Amino acid sequence: MKFIVSSSQLLKQLQVLGGVINSNNTLPILDNFLFELSKNELKISASDLETTMSAVVEVESDSKGSIAVSARLLLDTLKTFPDQPLTFKTEGESAIEISSDQGKYDMAFFSGEEFPKAVSLAAPSTTVIPSAILANAISKTIFAAGNDDLRPVMSGVFFQFSPESLTFVATDAHKLVKYTRTDVTANESAEFIMPKKPLNLLKGILSGSESDVSIEYNNSNAKFTFDNFVLVCRLIDGKYPNYEAVIPKENPNKLTVDRASFLNSVRRVSIFSSKTTHQIRLKMAGTELNISAEDLDYANKADERLSCDYQGDDMQIGFNSRFLSEMLNNLNANDVLIEMSLPNRAGILTPIDGTDEGEQVTMLVMPVMLNS
Figure 1: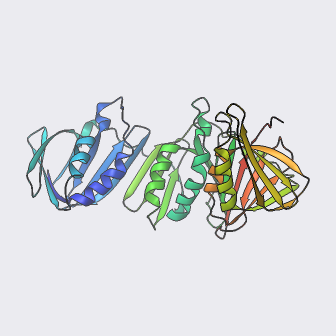
Figure 2: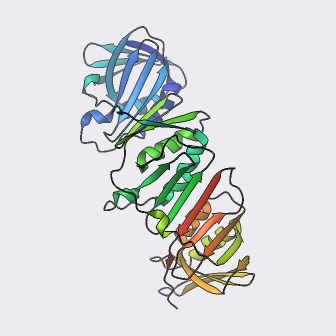
C-alpha cells in the first residue's frame, strides 16, 4: 500500500487519537495505530479495548490495505517535521517506509488483522446534540465525578435523556452537579453512565467543533459521531444513585454574592486552612459574609469580609474550600446564589446570570462539621 499525506494534518489527528492509548497495555498491539487505507481515505484507529476512536484523513492514493504502526514512534517522528507532504509505502511484509524532503525512515508494522475491532451497536437509540452544548455539559459536570474504584458508578457522568430535556449528573458523594438542557430533547427516555476517559477525549475535540454530535447508545455501549471522528466506548455497568433524593428542597437561608470576589476570597483564605480538611467557615449575618479558616497545628489563620445579600437566620457553616473553589470556577455567572437550611445539610449553588436559554445548573456541596 502507498499513500501521500500532509504531515501536519496527520499529526493533528494522531495527537487526538493518541489520548486513547494507555501507557501500559496488556496487549502489545494496542500500542499501535491501525491504518486502514481505501483509495483517498485513510481511517486511523486507536483503542484500549474499552474505548475505540477513529478519524478519517484525506490522502492521495489508489491502493488499499490495513496495517498497525507504533504510535509512539510515529508521533515522535511527525512532531519533528515542518508541514510537508509525506509518502508512506509498505516495503515487503514487515516494514513501512516514510519519505520526506529530508530523507527516508523505515518502521516495522504489524498486520491490521490483529487489531481488535470496534464494537458494533445492536439496535441503538439515537439522539443528536450540538457539539457546543455537549462540550459544555461535559466540562460543567466531569470535575464532580468520583475516583473511587469501589464505587464505579460514581466515577462517570450520568446521562439522562427524555422527550422534555437532557440531564447530565456527576457526584462523588461530597459534591454533586446536575446540568439540564430543555432546549435539546431525545425521542425516548434513556439513561446510561459514561466513563471519564472518553468524556475527556470528547471535551478536548468538541470545544473547537461547530457540528452536531450523533449519540447512539444501547445497554452496554455508546457511539459518538461528529466531523470526521467516531468514538465507541463501553458504558459503566450498574444503577446510578437516586441523586434527586439528596438535593434538599426546603432552603430558607439564601445568600447572593459576587462570584469572582467570593472565589478569590475562598482561594486566599483556604491557604490558611488545615491541610487535611481544607475547611473554611462561612458566617452570614445581614449584609455581611465572613469567610475564615484556621490551621491549629501551625497557628495560621485568616479572616475576610465580603458584602453580600443574605436573607435568613444568622448562621455558620463549614465547607471544603477545594470543592467550593472548583464549583465557583466552573460557573460563568457574575453573581451566584447559595441556598442553605442547616449547618449539617448540603448547600446548593446556582448561577443567577450567565446561563443560556434552556440551560440550568445546580451544584450541591456537602458541609464539613465545624469544630467550635
